[in-house]
Structure formats: structure tokens, C-alpha cells
Length: 373
Image 1 (cartoon, rainbow, N blue to C red):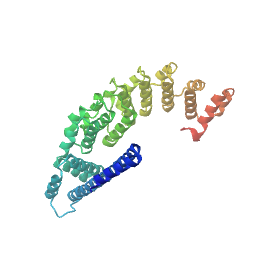
Image 2: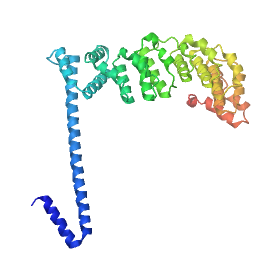
Image 3: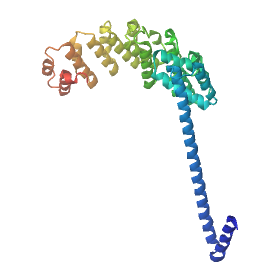
Image 4: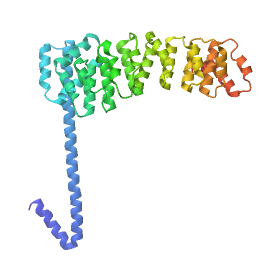
């Protein structure tokens, strides 16, 4: 008698002895055990498949790395042509292409000089640059971002036109990758044109990454950011002003002076701070006249400008000591401490004795441990 007949006989016996209720309970338990067994088998098969995939990936990764090291360092008896042909034979699927692309990008980041150039050349020889270019046409935005990153790391300049089309992509990550890639791939004289094409606001994170790229790729050789000051995208203008100050672009002093009266508060503030860092001193009286009707942030920037340019009318700072804003009053106290170290803070403590808050700010400015706080 086969197992099915055994189960059927058992069901009939249960029905005779205990009725349909027991038969229902039996089938419920049997179904649960059967599904549990199926689930266990599927889990084991899935784990086996994952382990097999992991072993395959590990073996393939080792295979690629050994041959790439042989090409880069001559660590094999085979010729370069043999290594390249062997690698090409393994590039049959997108998975294999992506795995090799990831390895080469990782290698490129860790190498410099001739070895880095050789990795980039191998990337082309193995036609991986075409693979990366093709990813820019994908519907999935994460694949597009990955392709842009690969083209940037491998310095594939043929990708510039396609990356430009993604510069204002709806997804912030793709935009960020495109901005950084174009800034590094464009010819040196055209790099600032990237900012002229951006329509979305730059986030703080974008600005930090772009700043690091400018610093590492260009050193301190950028002479002017002035061409970006007239753009309608305020985030780009703010970034350009900050970079002008950071790179010490003295050619931008005149346009920055004009921007000290810009309608936008943030731009006015950043322009005055940039002029302070660039060592300009020609706007002292203009900014003193402008101070009274300004926003708090701009007033603070004006006080810094006047302090660092050695403005000698101390009565202006003394008047600012009683400003209702703690932020402004403290900056005025710091300016007085820097411009009149002799007799500070005693003469002001005596003068402003009834005003406890002002005294606290004067003492704060006089405490050398807190002067940079």
C-alpha cells in the first residue's frame, strides 16, 4: 500500500471513530507540517544558491585581481596580450563587467602616477568605458549615478556630453555625481562653465564636495570666480563668493565691493566676509554708513571687516557695544579688544558699569581663552 492509501485509510478511520471535526484538525496539522517542510527546503536551496553565488563571485574577483596585478606589476610569465585576452573571455555578462569595473575603479583610487594612468588605459582596452557610458542611458537612476562615478574615476572625457544632460537630473544623487564629474573632466579653462549650467540649488553637501574637488584638482591656481557672480542661481553665487575668498582671488575684489550692497542678505553678508579675507580696506566708511539699517548677519560681517582692516574710529565699536543683539555686541567687544589692547577691558568696565550684560561681553572678549569662541 502506497503512502497516499495509508493517509486515506487513516482519514477514514478518524472519520468513523471521531467524526468530521477530527478529520478537519488532522488535515490542518498535516497542511501546516507540509508547508513547513516546503519552506525549509526552499530556505536551504536559497542559502545553497547564495553560497554558490558568493563562491563564484569570490573566484571571479580573485581571477580578475591576479591578472590585473600581472598587467600592472609584471607579476606573471604570460604576456600582457594573453592577460587581456583571458580577461575579455570572462566578460560575457553585465555582472562580470560590473565586477571588473568595480575592481578597477577601486584600484584607480589607490594608485597614482604611471600606475594610475595604466589602470585608466586598461579600462579603455577592455571596453569598460563603453559599458560605463551605456549605463548613463539606463532608466534606473542608481545605475546612471554609478556610470557617472566610473567615468569620473577613470577620467573618460568622451562622457562629458552625456553627463551634461544629467547635470539637472530630478534625482539629487545623480545631479551631485554629474556636477563633480564635469568639474573634474572638463578642460581647465572650461571648468567654471559647469556652474553656469546648474539650475537646481546647491546643497551644503554639494558645495563641500565641489570645494574639495576644486582644491585637489586646481590647487591655488584659480584666479577669478567673478564670471559666476551675476548668475540667477543664488546658491551658485554664494559658493563662488566663498571660493573666491578661499583661493585668494584678488581680481574679484571690485565685483565683490559692488555686491556688498546686493539686494539679497546672504549675498551681501558673504561678499563682505570675502572682502575681509581678501584684505580689502576701501569700503570702511561705506560700510559704517550702511551698518545702522542692516540685518544682524550683515552687521556682524561689517564689524569683522572693520576689525580686521584696522578701522580706527573706536567710538563706532563703543556704540555697537550696547546693540540689543548679543551677537553684535560681543563682536564689537572683540573688535575693541583687538584694536585697543592697552587699557582694555578696564576703561570699558568702568564706563558701562550699570549694564551687566555689556560687562559680561567685555570680560568675554578680554579672556584670551575665549577670544576664538
